[in-house]
Amino acid sequence: MEQSITVDIDASPERVWAVLADVERWSEWTETVTSATRLDEGPLQAGSMARLQQPKLPPTEYVVTECQPGHSFTWVATSPGVRTTASHALEPLTDGGTRVRLGVEQSGVLGVVMGRLFFRGLTDRYLATEANGLKARSEGTR
Image (cartoon, rainbow, N blue to C red; front, side):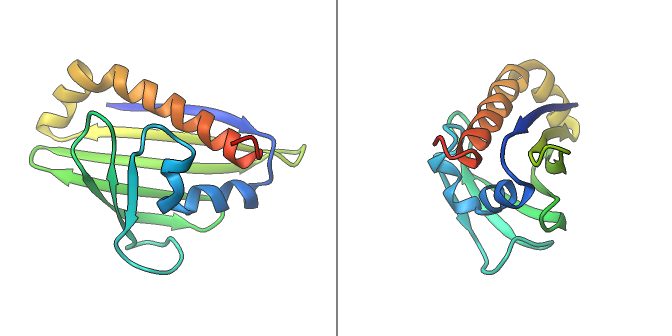
């Protein structure tokens, strides 16, 4: 089951990427993350790892599986019966702004059931909150 949201941001893709790739500061601009800790050093890239703590969810470790710096990254978290894949993609707009698509896919035996029955509304709220927070931070209003 996949859920996503798209938001247009009045900031350059470079600015939006700088905010998005600075994972450890996410808790400053989105209420959906209480803390984020990189488990490695250096720029965000394939193989990078981070631990996120989010309200109503257990602490989760994500591993970046795909990364095109300045454009997109995907990371995956696994637990018994659940695989969570979160994607973050930037598209430059002709006016100098950026379109961002945030997506979450729950798979696995428990992931599909839990995603449909229990977490659909929560995921929709979290995606909207994250999109709005990213927009505000990137535009300099948060």
